Image 1 (tube, protein in one colour):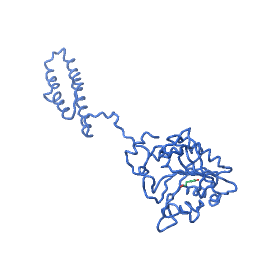
Image 2 (cartoon, rainbow, N blue to C red; image 1 turned 180 degrees about the vertical axis):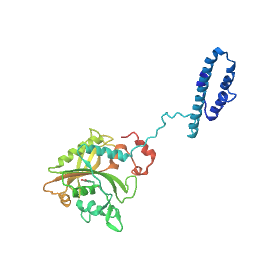
Image 3 (cartoon, rainbow, N blue to C red; image 1 turned 90 degrees about the horizontal axis):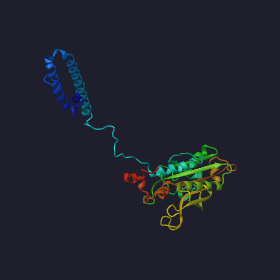
Image 4 (tube, rainbow, N blue to C red; image 1 turned 45 degrees about the horizontal axis):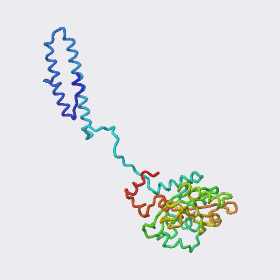
Length: 332
Ligand code: DAH
């Protein structure tokens, strides 16, 4: 009995060989049945039962062996353990720009900012005119903006500030939005410049919004992104759509402000432009500037990613080299 219960077969041929050995006309079990005649009468009942049990067991066992050999053969496998964990497991990773964008969005969403989007193929009004760019502003120049040849009014947006205008024209304050997206500029591609990159724009308009609010939000943002010891510095600047305007630096993420090659010895790194929304922009977009004020800010995602991960060449972001992307598998 034990011998039969322990039978093994690697394939259908071996299972058939077992059937022949035990159950064929000249098989061992068949032979036992033939010998049954010579068993003394008083043992016939007992022996008969045993032989029948053995025969049933052998039938079932050999059929089961044939069946499992058959399924393994039809799926092209032999004796694989299907419960084993596949190894090595190759995990995909998020693109570094997506990781950083998500982190920025996460910080501002905790401050009540919601996402807004606008088209990458835009018109001059939303990218420039509605944002107080004079007709002869150099940013409109062929060297900067991609124009559609047959429709000079249709352009690829050169900044995400166009989404400010798109949101203002459809909504009244309070407005508190964050607009991540791709932008295009007619630049020769090199390690330090690209014809497309990514920005995130922020806009907050309500009653009594002040420059102090802007400064506080940006300080919190910088400390969440680069660590609690991060300092910020605002330098006066100029943008057509904000008045006053500023550029913001953070204390160097490498040396903490002492001066190193990353910050070129200054201890500071520029990360964004910002300011109070120019009343002319509010008016051009249908918002009463005698009631409402607001602030705006805009930053390049590649720039922030470079600071966080020291990516030296901008082109790596769009080459899709798996060896580069794999370095971010463990990042958030
Ligand atoms: N649009 C600017 C650029 O592309 C960035 C910017 C500066 C956006 C100041 C703003 C802002 O909202 O207030 O360089």
